[in-house]
Image (cartoon, rainbow, N blue to C red; front, top):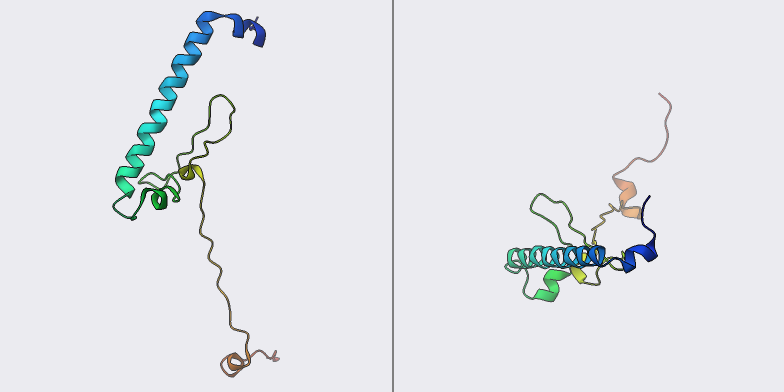
Length: 107
């Protein structure tokens, strides 16, 4: 049978494994962030400006990490996903009516 939360909290072996894994995860997060900063600082003038870009790999995939304690994403600006949305605006002013015939005609 699986352990309950209370049993896991009291189990010293489980707690040592959990602490070890959290340290490994935190090291991984800091290495990935530093690699991202080293690569992107040449494109942006400051670290703050660089961190406003989402943490993307060279292939375009996004690296997002979460706090192991709370399950929430880190508050680091590099963990925000920024998506640029472009929407084409069509001209609808009177000048446009000279170029586009908007009347329906029967064939």
